[in-house]
Length: 440
Image 1 (cartoon, rainbow, N blue to C red):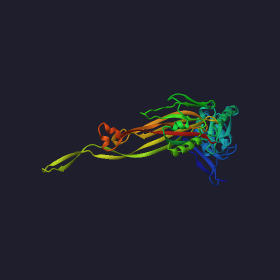
Image 2: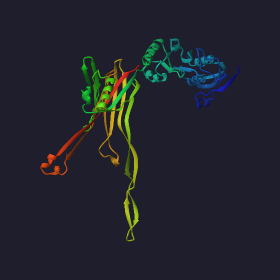
Image 3: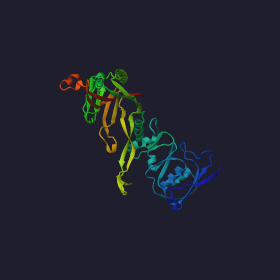
Image 4: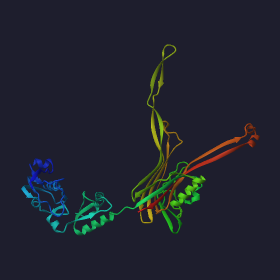
C-alpha cells in the first residue's frame, strides 16, 4: 500500500530553528485513520528523522503522539542527539534514537515505556488497574503524593482504568491503595419536615433538649441507645434561639409523621414543607424552604433646583432632591445544609448547618428592612433511620386590651365593674425534623 508523508512538528520553533526535518509515513487507512496501538508491538511504519542536536525528550514525545501511543518517560530521558535516519521502521528507529542516550523501551498493552536499560532489566513492569466506581482521572491527584519513589501512574482517556509502572512489589502496593479508594459510595436518603408548632408540642412528643452550646454532648435514653453531639452553636437574639435535640429511640420518622398529621387536625402544628433528597456519603446536600420578598428602596442622589414664577413678577427657586427607586429582594425562610457520612451500617455522621432568616422589626437603610439571621451548626453521630430535631422559639408577641360596656365602664371607681382587661402572649416555634436513612 502506498505511503503518504506528513511533516511532524516537534517542540515548535525550537526544532525549526535547528533545521530538523522529521517525516513520518502514515498508512492510508479507510475510515478515521491511524488508530491507537493495541497488543505488545509497535507499528512497522517507516519514519525519517534528520537534524543536529535534537532535544531527545521532545523528539520521543512527538513520535509517540504522532502514532497515538500512550507513553511513560523516566527522568533519565534527556540530552540531545544528532540523527540522519531515512525510512527506517519505527521499532528500529526508536532503538537507534534511544541507544544514543543509553536508553531502551518496552511496550505493553499499547503503552510505551522508556527508561535506562538497567531499570528495564531490573523488573519494571506495567499493570492495568480497572476501576468500577471512581473516575480514573479523579483518583490521580489523590494517589500521586503517596506513590513509591519512581512509580508512574497514568489515567487512560480510552477507558476507566489506570496504568501503573513500577517494580512488582510496589505494583502490589499501588493496586491495594487504589482498590481501597475505588469503593461504591453509600447513598443516604435525607427526609425532613419543617413545622410550626405550639409551645407544648415538644413535650407531647418527647424531645430531649439536653445539651449545651459549644460542647460535646451525649444523649442516653437507655443502655442500648447513645448518640454523640459535637460543636453545637447556639446563637441567641433576644428571645429567639435555635437548639438541637433528638427524639426517643422509638420515635422514627414514620411515627413522627403520623403525630404531625394528628397535630395538624388538633391545631398543635402546621407542616410547612416536607423535602427529601438522596445524596452520596460525603457529599453536601442543600434544602431550601424560603421565600423571596421584593421591596422598593428609595435613595436620594443629591440636590437640584426648580425655578417657578412668583406672584410679584419675580421668580422663586425651590430646592429639590431627586429620588430614585430600586427594586430589591431579601430571602426569608430556612436553608438547611447537610453532609452525611456513613460510618457503618448502623451509624451516620451528620454535618448540619441550619440558617433561619426573617424580617426584623428594626428599620433598615433607605426603607429597606433589616433581616434577622439565626443559625445552628452541629456535627452529630446518629443511628441509621433515627430522627434529629432542630427547634427554637422564633418570636413572642404580647398584647393587651380593655373591653367594657359603653358609658358604664367609664364611670369613676365603679367603672371597673363593667369592664375587663385582656392580656395575651403569642409564641411561634419552628422545628425541623431530619431523618437519615441508608438506602443502598
